[in-house]
Amino acid sequence: MDKINLYLNSLFLSNQVPVADKRKELFETFAADEKNRALVTTILENQKKMVTDWKIKNRIEDIRLQAFMIPNATVGKAYHTVIDFDKNNWTDFAYYQLDHLEAVGGMSYDKSTGTVAGIPENSGEYKLSLKYRLTDEPEDAELHEKIIPFVINPDPKSLWKNIPSDQADPYWKDDHCTAFAPIGKRHVVVASKRGRSHANAGSFRDDDFAFADISTTGWSIVSLADGAGSASISRQGSRLACRYIVEYFQSQLTGEIQNTLETLILSNQANGNEAVKKELSLCIYNLIGGGAKKVHDRLLEFAITNGYQLTDLNTTLIFTLFKTFDFGTVVLSFGVGDCPVAVIPADFSEVKLMNWLDVGEFGGGTRFITTTDIFSSPKFASRINFKVFPDFAYMFLMTDGIYDPKFVVEANLEKTEKWKEFVNDLKGANDAGNKVDLDANNTHIEQQLAEWMDFWSPGNHDDRTLAIIF
Image 1: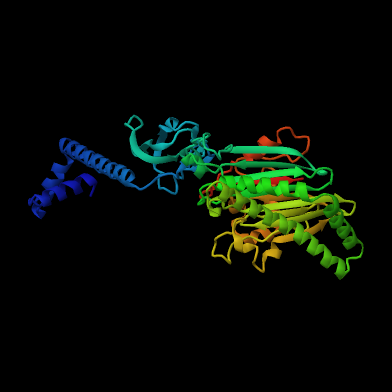
Image 2: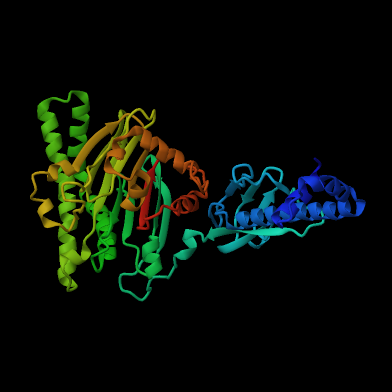
């Protein structure tokens, strides 16, 4: 029985006029009539078309309701993603196009690979238009549309304000400061930048630094300080602490004191017996410890004279005193607070951390040069260090604005591989590609270091100060 006969049988049955056995011959004649066959053929074609149209409508609605979005992008950051048609069950698209991507700026779509890529220029919530035609539809059918949400986040840096600090303030200082100079038989480059959190509020840079060659002695000093954000004039405390320690050694490390120190260093190198070691340790303790105490006392004097509490000047302080001899470079150091001093040997075999940080034992809190009880603590002597380096590539002093994002935890400061990463970061191995060419002939070295220090690190927006002796 052909499809026309089948259809007519079904039609008559559903309308309660079934074909009786005695009418079969009549039915065959009726079904064979060309007019009836044409009517049934048209009906069947229309049914088929309606079924196809309904399937298409269903499919279009399924696609419209299908959850789909492409990953968010960020202004100024390279972006790449692939729209996988197989994975999204869009293999029945006979034709498609992606529209409205041009509104983002800096982006393009490669239809051959399904790739959306580029560097977004504009932030916002965009609606991309995926227009398509299904394989079951005629070529001249109107295109359907699926909206694809595409979020472009703003550059996080752009969300931060940069409000200048008040130059009328009696303790105002530059929001950003750099320096580069010969020091001893080496060079030093330093940059100190106000943190984004301070810039956003228009407050002051609390970090500071100072360095100097000590007359013609061959000794040099580099100091860094990080004023406590909770102290009202810590910016002045850090500036004075750095200045005072330089002034102290310029006045003290001369004549007899210099001769005594260097004689003991040379004797220690020659034989290093216990008596010499003990005498050298005492000499260093008195010189370095005396300098730290002098800074404390002068800050106290400043506070009293100007009507402040000593805690208003709270600041950390780290410094190194160094000189190159025939046998190597002698480095003396002191540290109070959470700012590290590290020396990297020329062969990178071992990193020497010259101070311990005031973290952990004090529940994450730090100590300051203005904290009186550090001088009576049994641990005070351990804040002073002495080391001879046959040769070294770099000496680093940094505040926690550098240490926190780059090393994260104190334990990493002891790891040579972390310092290798840090040096490589300085050489350009970072997302921004900023590098510092640590060459004495580099006339752009200050600018390079300042640009490198503008790195982005979520949650780390404190002042940043870094000194590199090389």
